[in-house]
Image (cartoon, rainbow, N blue to C red):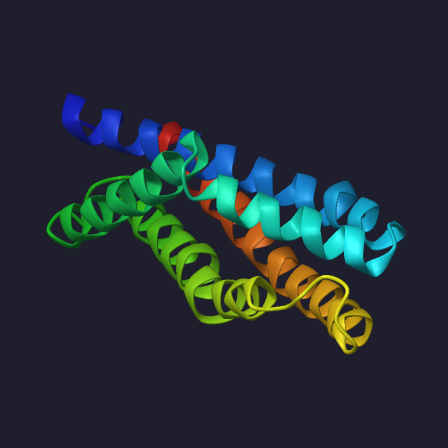
Length: 159
């Protein structure tokens, strides 16, 4: 494995692992904590999280990892005969589809709907319970996909 390919694979493994950890935190305790709050307080807290996350280092890591995975997948398509490169391609697809695309298709629309909701509105409590369940279910998918991508990139490094 040449130096560029090694660096690219290492960066992808670290990025996927970092993102998996953030998603894991939300799945394992953040969303459960928000669900324990009265609906209005949980909604307001999640609305605040959704605003802050857009201007945080998380976005740089999330989007940067996606960019690295795109580069790794394109690069790997031209070097499939080399050891570990198939694992790079698998890791890239896992992250790009299971974490990045799932975020855009499932989590972001829920966040946008939540942003329009008045925390103490008449339908807020019922919306909130559905939001927690559905958002968290898709977050589990993102967590597993990012973790599996990190494992795949790690296997590529070991090859």
